[in-house]
Length: 162
Image (cartoon, rainbow, N blue to C red; front, side, top):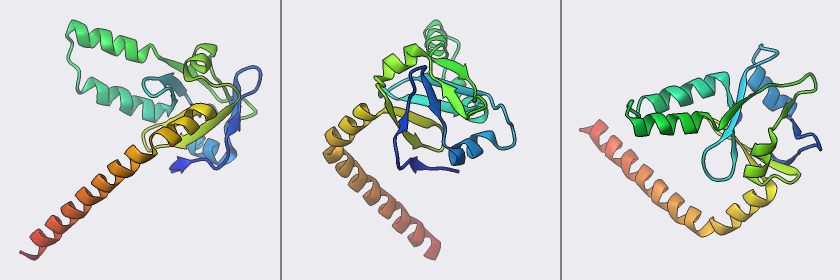
C-alpha cells in the first residue's frame, strides 16, 4: 500500500488526462486490468480518487452515520453526485472531468498524496499554499497528537503491569 506524497508532481495534459505512475497503477489495478475508479471532491480543494473498494467503504461508512431524513437524503445525494466514474486507459491515464479540474484549481501540475482511504489530487499551487499557511497549525496539532499518543501508551503500559 502506497502512503504519503509522491516525490514529483504529475503533469495534466491538454485533454485533462493524468498519467498514473506505474507503481501506483499496480496498487490500483491488483490484477484487474480495467478497475472501476471514482473521482470527486468534498472538501479542501483537492480531488479524491477512490478504487472501487475504497469507494464502497466510503459510501458504506457514510451510510452508517446518516439516517433517511430529508436533510440526510439531500446531503447523501449531493455528496455522491460530486463523484464521477473514471477508468484507466491503455496508457495508464485517467481523464479528469473539466468541472473537477476547475473546482480544484488545477493548472498543469498535480501533487498526489496517497492516504489509506483515498488518493488526493491537489493543484500544485494550492498544495504549496496549504503547506506554507498551515505549518504553524500543523506543528501544534502534531505536538498535541504525539502527547496524546504518549499518554495512551503510558496508560496501556500501566494497565499491563497491574
